[in-house]
Length: 162
Figure 1 (cartoon, one colour):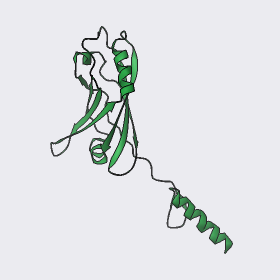
Figure 2 (cartoon, rainbow, N blue to C red; figure 1 turned 90 degrees about the vertical axis):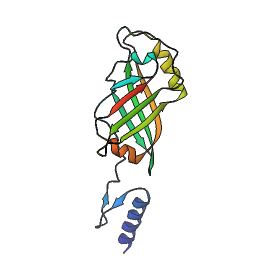
Figure 3 (cartoon, helix red, strand yellow; figure 1 turned 180 degrees about the vertical axis):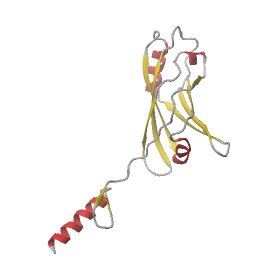
Figure 4 (cartoon, rainbow, N blue to C red; figure 1 turned 45 degrees about the vertical axis):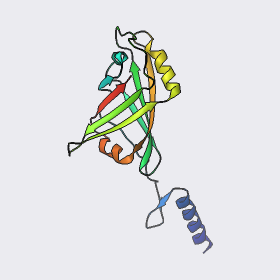
């Protein structure tokens, strides 16, 4: 009897702390966190004449946090100065990452992530660096989960807006 009460208490504690139990009272793994990815890297650049500075194909990685209909998305893009690129314009006030894709109903889905103020300062410094200099640009934003679902694991148009 005491053993049964102890097992019930442990199972209750595990459920209250995020664990799950199956029909036999066995503990199962908690649900995995939501993951987001796209099949390709940076496919284009736009914005000022500075958009010609980074090499195309810069790799990206994503982290998603939160629950519900709106999720926090962080993207890291590793940019590298293109050969013979020079700072051409005053840098933009903001740098953005656009991820977009066409759906089966022929409508576009687009998410926009932005570099924060501290990251923007690093970008401005990087723009005047020599050929070959690399920088990990971190973009953040709150994105509807429904939009992430539409773009997840697909080939998308990924635009760096400098």
